[in-house]
Amino acid sequence: MAERSGRSRILASVLVGLGTFLLAVAILVPAYSLDRLKKTPLDLEVTTIASGTGDVLDSAALLEGRAQVDTGVPIVAQRYVIAEEPSDAEVVSLQAGQAVIRTDKQGDTGLLTASVDRVTVDRVSAMPVEPPVGTIQTSLDMPATEVSHTGLQYKWPFDAEQKSYPYFDLNIRTSQDINFVEETEINGMRVYHYSQVIEPTDMFEAVGDPTYRLSLPAETWGVPGGEEPVTMTRWYQNQRDVWVDPVTGVVIKGQEMMNQYYARDKDEPEVTVLQAVLPFEESTIENQISQAKDGQDQLALASRTVPLVAGILGAIALIVGIVVGIRGGRGEKGAVAGGPATPPSGSGQAGGRDEWASSDKTEEFPTVQMDKGDFDESGFTEPPRQQ
Image (tube, rainbow, N blue to C red; front, side, top):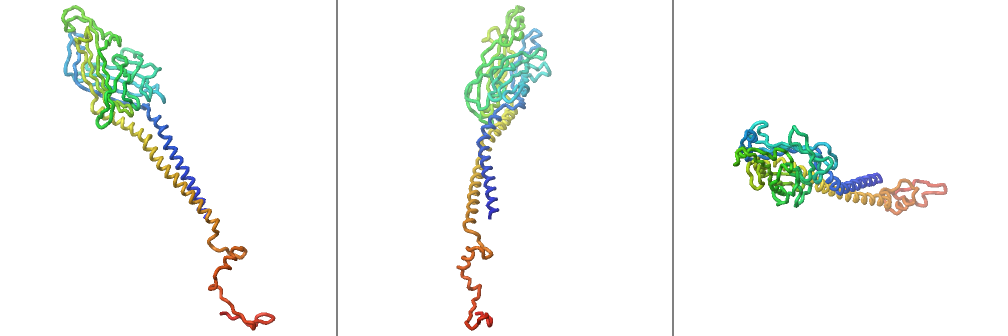
C-alpha cells in the first residue's frame, strides 16, 4: 500500500508540473513568438510581373530625327526583390532589380527602363532607416547614386491600418501619401486597397538626367518651327493602386496607370514617351496570396492554436494531478488508521488477543467435558472424553 501511495505522489507531481509548464507556454508563446514572427524574413525573395499594352516612343527613330510613337505595344514590367547585407534582427536591406520591356522587340532594343534600387528598412514597420543611405542605379555605365528613401515601397507594415502612408516613387525619387480607399477581396482574400495620384512632375528637376530635357529641331518633335530648336521637358504622372494583406503586409496586387511625355507645358503633352496600364499578372497575384497565407498561418499558430491547445492540456494535466495527489494521500492515511486487514501472528500483541478473545470461534475449537473421576492426585487417570 505504501508503494502504491508513493507512485501516486510521483504521478501527481509530474502532472502538476506538466500542467504548470503548458499553462506557462499558453501565456508566453504569443508574447514571445509574435514579436519574432512579425518581421520581414531575412531570406526574402519575391518576383512580380505586371503586363499590359500601351504607347511607346521609339527612341531609335528619335535619334534619326523623327518622334515616332508606337501604339498598342505589349509591355511587361518585372521586379525581383531579395534581402541582402546589412541585415540583422531589426532591419533588412533589400535590393530590387526592375525593368520595363516592350516584348515586340528583342534584346536591348526592347528595354524601356531599368534600375537597381537598394534600401534598408525596419523589419516590422517596413519604413526605410538610415544608415546606410539607399542607392539607385539606372545605368550599368554609371555608378549608383545615393538617394534617401522616405516611404514604403515593396512591403507594408504588419497589421496595416486603414490610413495614409508615405510611398516612395522610384521615378521621381520622392515620397507622397498613398491613401486608404476600401477593404475588399481578391480571390477570396481580404485586402486593403490604397491609391496614390502623382500629378505631372518635372523629371529633369527630380532626377537631373540630361535626357529628361532635350533641345531638338521642331520638325523632329513633330511641331511647327522647322529647324528651329525646341526645348522640351520630360514629365511624369501616375495613378498607383496597391492591394495589401493587412495581417502580413504582403502586397497582393499592384497596378500603375503611368504616363510619361515630353512637353513645353506640363498641362499640354506633346510627345508620348510611355503611356500604359500595368497590373500584376494573375500568376503573380496567386503567388503573393500564397506567401501571405503562409505568414498568416504562422501567426495564427503562435497566437491562437498553440496557446489554446497548450492551455487546455495544461488545465487538464493540472486538475488530474491535483485529484491524483488528493486520492493518494487519502489512501495512505486510511491504511494507518484502520490497521492491517489480517490478524497479527503471534500472541505478543494485546490488541490481537482481545480481538480473538471476543470472536465466536466455537466451531473451530472442540470443547472437552471432564468429570471429577477423570483425574486423581497425580493427574489424569484416563484420557478426557471428547464430545
